[in-house]
Every structure is written in C-alpha cells, then in structure tokens.
Image 1 (tube, rainbow over the protein chains, first blue to last red):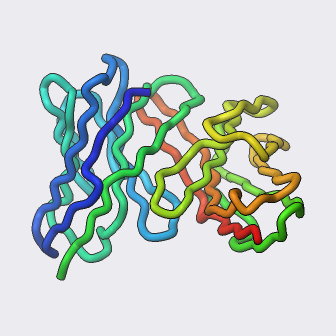
Image 2 (tube, rainbow over the protein chains, first blue to last red; image 1 turned 135 degrees about the vertical axis):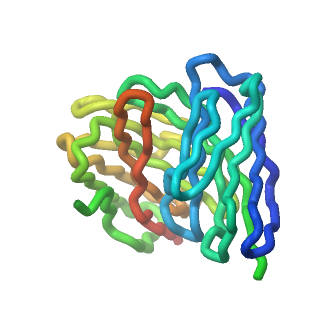
Length: 112
Length: 114
C-alpha cells in the first residue's frame, strides 16, 4: 500500500466546512483513496472512497487532484460530533483480502 | 444484523496470564483482522485471515496467536500477557463488491496488563 501523509491536527468552527488534506504521492494507478474516521474510543468507521473522480455521499465529499497525488476530504457543515481522528488510506480495491495500513491520521477538533 | 462483535469489552490481566479475545461477524465476510491501538497511535495490524482456514502475520504478531474457527469467528490469544500488550484491540472484517471495499470494525476490547 502507498504511504500517506496527513497533518497531525486541525481545528474547525462548528457549522463551517472542514477540509482535511492528504498526500499520497506514490499512489499506484489501481489504488483507491479511502477515508475512515475514529470517534473517541470507538472502532474506525468508513466515510468515503474514490479513484480519480470527485465523490460525494451523505457524510462527506472527496476531492482528488488530477495527478492523484493528493486529496481533500470535505465535511460541508462540521458539527461537534465530527470531532474525531480522520485516516486517509490508499489501497487496491479488487480482491477479497486487503492489508490496510492506518497511519496516525488527523485529529479534527470542531470548536463551538 | 449485529455487524462485528467483540468480547470482552474490558479485561485486566496480570503478567504471565493468558486469555483469548473473541470476535464474530454476521455479514458473511471472507477477510477478518486483528489490530491493536496504543494511546495516540494509529492502528497496527497483528494478524489477519484472508479467508476461512488461513491466517497470516501482520506488522506486530509477536506474543499473539490467532484461530479462524469458521467464517464467522476469528479469535486472538495472548499466551503469556506482558505489560507491553496493554492496548485497545479491534477486530475488523471486510466486504468487497466491485470497486467497493470497506472494513467494518468492532467496538474494541480494552486490555490492561499489570
């Protein structure tokens, strides 16, 4: 799996958009970008994934640069419940087994 | 549909004691994983099972053994617990459908070794 780098921590005002960056400069052509988050003491939770097109679901949007070397997770209207550690991961999407490497992620603090 | 369940939720052991952490999933997933998470750290893979009947070492397998009892269950055993194994242990399973590949995590087991 390609290595990713994320800022250690970020703050965001409640109600504003939270933009979480991730660098994955060694990503391969068949690797997808996945985002998970871990709310205090709970197991990580899937948020979104994408290959090269921008993606949106009910939780977030994912913007991937044209060269695919970086991406941004956007939480459009951050709430206090979005305070969590956010992990950016790259992985091949095919096949059953997936060895996934979680880094230390970005700790997002949403401020009232 | 309970997802991924883990037992126990909390455990305190003395150095040298043994115990087994249980994990079960009811989603018919082939792949299952055990991770540990130390304070302020990311998840580190201990062991994984790509499919029923197979297991392989991850990043930090020393001091642990696993059993993939059947498709649903994947247990983690500490034969002789050490204080360095104090951690939160997460079990996960994976669904793959086309380009969609998601890991589902259990609630974790918080283990303290004195």
